[in-house]
Image (cartoon, rainbow, N blue to C red; front, top):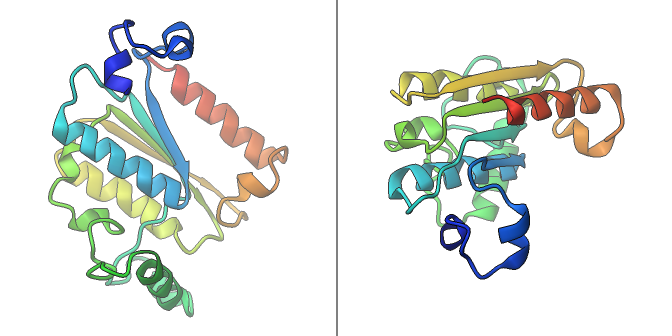
Length: 183
């Protein structure tokens, strides 16, 4: 549907009157961040007629892997919890090295279909290590865009959803607005 709207001649009047298809961003929190990442991969691979994503915003994205990185191994029970949750959500998965949860294992990573990415991680979130690692593997993949990771110390997973008007949540929103308004 979105690609049929791109030229301004689509059949959805609200989209025709209100959407700016020259400035398209995706974003998501936790598993939604994972989904936004995979939609951007698909857009990059399929080169949909006229569809371009400018950037993606990932807030505490849900990524993991079989082998622990950085401080993951020090978090008692985290890997087991993530693995059980992942296999519950995706019972046909090959496990924690499935490219759907571990971007490092995705041979199509360099095809990410956007120019820029911002990743928010929370200092008390076991997933924070993967947010930093995502930046590292994305840069090594040959993807030509820019990626930034912002860490918010002393916060838990998706902190901004539980206290939307707290200082750290408001700071995140200001950063997001800046990200969206960069040329």
